[in-house]
Picture 1 (spheres, rainbow, N blue to C red):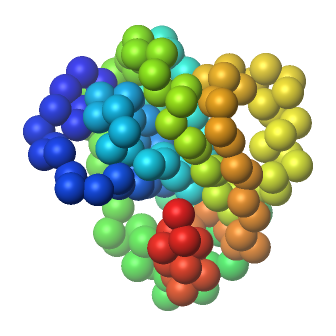
Picture 2 (cartoon, rainbow, N blue to C red):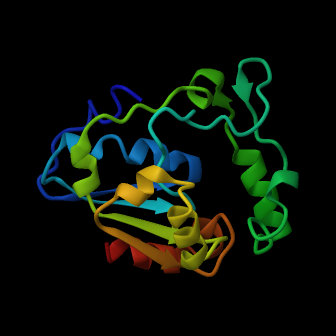
Picture 3 (cartoon, rainbow, N blue to C red):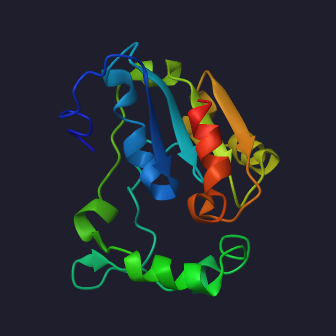
Length: 174
């Protein structure tokens, strides 16, 4: 994760970094690099990555890439609200993740990151479930965030597809 955000110019005002599920990982490390400039980090369907974990080693690697695994791993609350057309469109648009990225190790060293406010938008799980995971020690990085909001959105894993206006309104209010 070294270098994430290194090429991002300093914005004129405070910005909001946004990531979805595994892509929540790159939204977090740059936060302390611009003290006073990152107003919030928003995680959609994910919680903060922990130092030392693999970035996204979620599915089998084939030919140096982690391809979309099909819909079986997402059956149930993750995808129940997607139409057949949306399922087909998402699968067709999926881009394989390079093995080096999927198995890359997250390195978090700047303690200022815990001062950056975090909002976790909870789609296929509830804020209460997220709080249980945090309190059980399942996500130590999230537990250390000094300013954490858990926000419910009634959707599956892809609210940007099934609830785009509601998600956009949430993000605009950040």
